[in-house]
Length: 246
Ligand SMILES: [Zn+2]
Image 1 (spheres, rainbow, N blue to C red):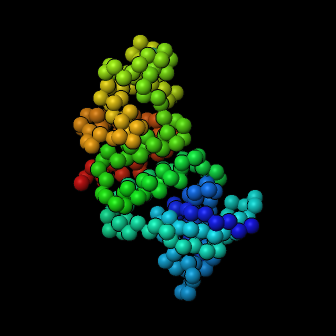
Image 2: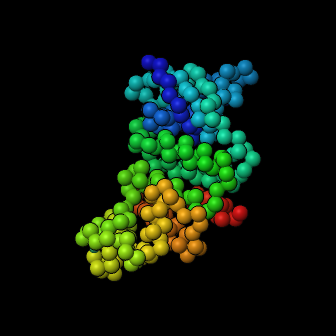
Image 3: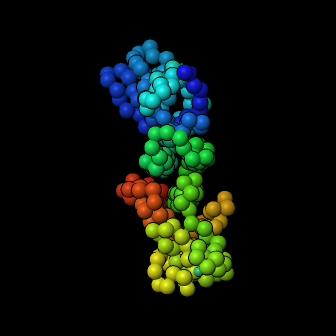
């Protein structure tokens, strides 16, 4: 069966002397891998048609019950040339694409997963991001996975958390709690961090975060990602360092 889809190249591996395996995040078929036969030959029709972080239109032979499909045609829709010149944006793109790659096995992806990556890459390619870009991306990633805590009310007694008091985050359960329900357990969530998280969630991120709030949000997102999405912190630390270096 031949299928058509739009997809973003997440990873490219050599296969034999002249072929490549490309792992894609596609719009309709989730995460999939294709063999690109002879792509490194001089006259290959695939030359220049795909690269990391390109969005491409694919035609592929879907092999049922096999995880490796055969790429038949490939046409670049969005090449995002900024990543060849802006190494900081490229580092952030690597982190974002890598996190989404590791968070999902080959197969169907959550609704909005492809759009989240496409939008993240488009933003990174159009403007060098500031440090606050990454926690916002991570919050959107946790939301897409259904792992983001509710930041408005205590997950136990439903007390309103928008009144300007600090609260606590139960990282293991991915839940925000009022001080009374937390009874001293969990990570402190300052009122300023809670507000910043709500603004990020609502697509209305503050233009800049005070250093203290930024650090707090960074640690909170890191704890949730490590605990629930099993993401290693090494590439994350590197991406944060690179964006902060500007
Ligand atoms: Zn409570």
